[in-house]
Amino acid sequence: MNAMVLAAGRGTRLAALEPDVPKPLVDIGGEPLLARQLRYLRSNGVRRVVVNAHHLSAAIESFARDYRTPGGPELVVITEPELLGTAGGVRNALGQLGEEPVVILYCDVLISEPLAPLAQAHRESGAAATLAVYESDQLERKGVISVDARGRVTEFVEHRRFDPGVRGLVNAGLYVLEPAFIAQIPAGVVSDFGHDVFPAALARGEHLGTHMLPAPVLDVGTPEALAYARLHA
Image 1 (cartoon, rainbow, N blue to C red):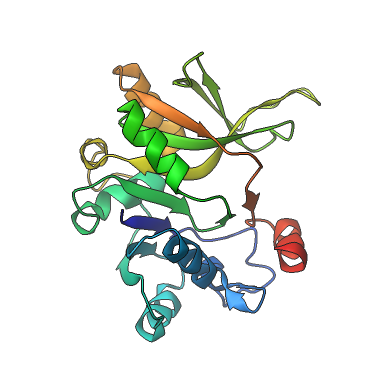
Image 2: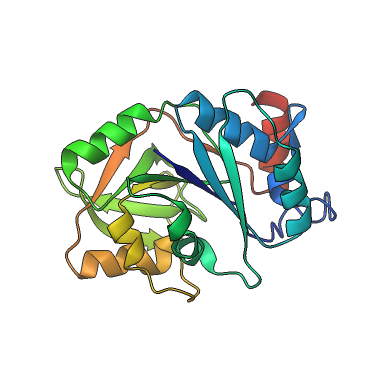
């Protein structure tokens, strides 16, 4: 499958640390975050990756021009003059994503689990979209998902307050989407998967599946998480 890495956000929570470096290029373990994501996707058989860029996009375009790794993946950068949101950015890139199901990965989410089980779950379920999730009691500022007994999504709860110790399923920021599902996203309109697109899909009766990850992913979108990743990831 092809993949898209969502990298157009401003990274405001990290800007105080490195104001002249876009979030996809912050250093983790001696390499830019985006290089790490490309290495992960290549190791899982992905041969073409589309990346969207907005904030400090020239630096990301320069990285892409210089990116040369034996075995790929091919790297395509799409610059958004105006931010389109997570879903709007994917819709904007539809023409570059091919005709097969596509992996969507948030740039600031570090994951080491193989992609094959997620792709297999998507194929076998017949879902329009399959979301990787993990169980956690750290639900603050997370997208939390409710599912039925078959693992189908029934509800999205975005950034609500939860009582301490409450466990739930967290949206990991890793999806497999059908091209037809992406095509239904309004073109040229700012939209977000968790707030807009997935709830609208549920409302019209679309099948949204889930795949349980055995461990939480590491979101490096905050200074504290970035510092942890630099020590442990």
